[in-house]
Length: 408
Ligand SMILES: *[C@@H]1O[C@H](CO)[C@@H](O)[C@H](O)[C@H]1NC(C)=O
Ligand SMILES: *[C@@H]1O[C@H](CO)[C@@H](O)[C@H](O)[C@H]1NC(C)=O
Image 1 (cartoon, helix red, strand yellow):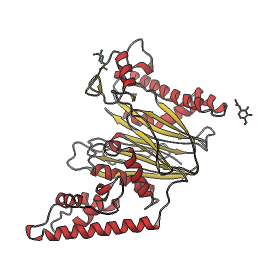
Image 2: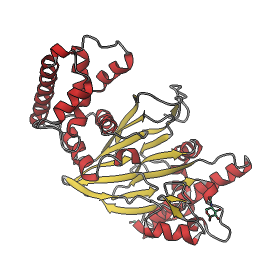
Image 3: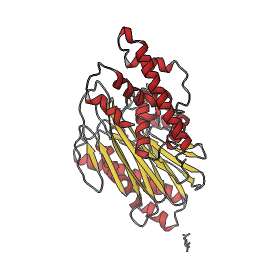
Image 4: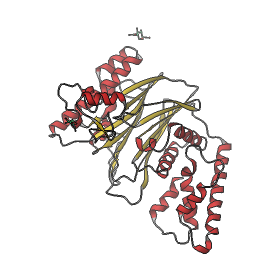
């Protein structure tokens, strides 16, 4: 199972590589683009689902990689990653297609495998892969006379039969849930972090309005070569560093539940525990990982995220199972919300149909039992909107709002 995806403007789909696609989409938006790109797969006793959505952003430059069973004899290993591009898409696209290969084929990683994959040597091989791809992209960019100013964060997991290697470069985040709670999450690389700030200042730069030189909001990234040309400093001592932080966690078959990889648009509106609880509650209602991923993005959009968003959900065999009680509770909740929306709309009857905002506000002021933890009312917005649209005699038959019906 191999997949690499990349999205920019409108809906053009170009199949290339095995399952590689990219789409495109245009200028300023007056309503969010809620169509999703989805995919899923399974193998090596893992299952994954992924989703990405443009949201309010004019351009979509997020990309993912999901590969179960790696080449070069690593068929029991898997790799998942999310790339969040900025100032253009080239770097995110290139990393989506080539980062894994730069990791698995570099001589440090190869040596690591010959040494029975000791944890430190694998970590070193991953680091080398990042430094190598960055150097390689710089060479390509210089040959083209430096036209490419784009950069991309990368967050990923390399899963071996014994360990999960969490890999982070930038401000996307990976989180692992084990035994019903957040077990681990990666640290974001923001210019204000003391270590990052020290490196930036040592390279002659400054941190203003929480940005590198007052402009870039992330302190580690691939690409961004304008921030990597301080003479006399090595690649990991520049204003922006391509060095990943890598953490290895031993796998625990009995307790490992799932891993979430997501770009900052998600974490801006959901805390680690919130998202972890929300995902666990969804997994008790459905085993469709694309649907769970879509619900994460919709919930974040309704919680106010204005960013483009991508999420990859990877489940271990110890993931919570669908429970008939949870399914029943959810169906009852939906029914309750539908009848409440109907009542609110009827009550206002004489003064005309209340708008959806009024309906949401009224519901938000009530105490509604069994709302999904972490997602709360925002995660039920599509259910509410669907019944609202059905009952609203003045609804415009606009296909965009109808698309929200498909998401549940
Ligand atoms: C790696 O494992 C093999 C088989 O278990 C063993 O024969 C070999 O000596 C080990 N190599 C190293 C470098 O530890
Ligand atoms: C960052 O700021 C420093 C100090 O003002 C300046 O020398 C450097 O050229 C700037 N670099 C970038 C990429 O903006």
